[in-house]
Length: 202
Image (cartoon, rainbow, N blue to C red; front, side, top):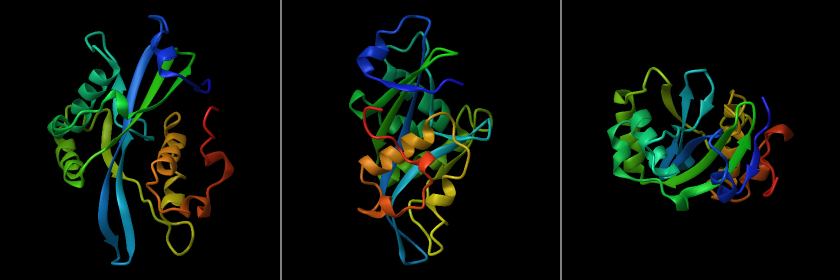
């Protein structure tokens, strides 16, 4: 599979009819909870287990009836996550990056959306009743944002899973750029070099 390269959104939208657009979103919410009464959770970040056994973000391919990327993404979220996804809307301002790859010609559009914890928990509750649950989506999972005393358990161990496409890199970029992790903790993670997010513009 060819590696996806970052492109500007305007450039991606000008690609011809032989290109398909795939949109997906990282949903996150502030979480004041504590693990074992001592480890702050800070945020809840959602990913999903896909039909192919890989981790990814909820979303899907755009269809002819979608008037915009965001319309298509919000439609897909209701199919993947159920009726609770209608309580919010992913907008153009939530777009973070686009990547284009060939064989086949696909443009992947990555978004992030800040929710309330109540909205996120409602998604977790409604997802088992969604149209695609048990088919394209096997379940939702929260990303562990902490590191345990052994220096491996938590986020480092989570990153050893198999991710679809650029999902792992996009996850790490979002955790860093949105300051979802505690300040300074990103540099202390035991993350192999091939897991680290690229710098902007690469």
